[in-house]
Length: 165
Image (cartoon, rainbow, N blue to C red; front, top):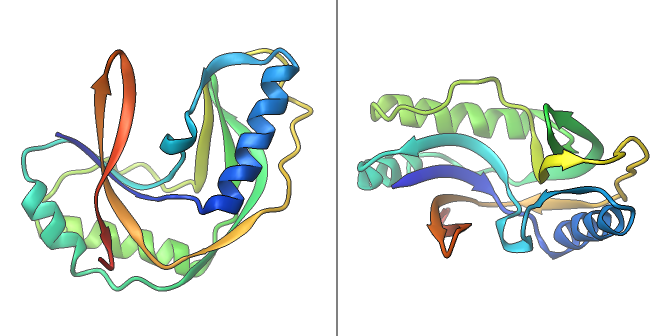
């Protein structure tokens, strides 16, 4: 099973992101737009594993603080367009605690430095330099263990469980 740990945006942040994506589409920006139900901020990417129970056990040990998240500017990773999320010490601490819990349980994960963002479009083609994200923020008091699967040629993300749950 392909797993990752994420914070899912609330309704206000999702609405803000979807509005920006709609405007980009109207302005001719092409690419693979992330469906509303797939929007998320990855905290740890685990990838393929058959150790779901061990992952749940590890994540259940993590204390979950309330974390304020705010959209910042958009950016690019290669041909991937994202909405930046303002980082803060509580968010960095949560990511550190999640990764430490996975380490204690011997769960491997992608160890790239954490860059808080929400992917909006993959394989972007078109002018994206004028994108302005609206002010939107939320308080996250939980995170989710998610699985990624292919259904009818599309990637679908499903929540397995949330913490605290």
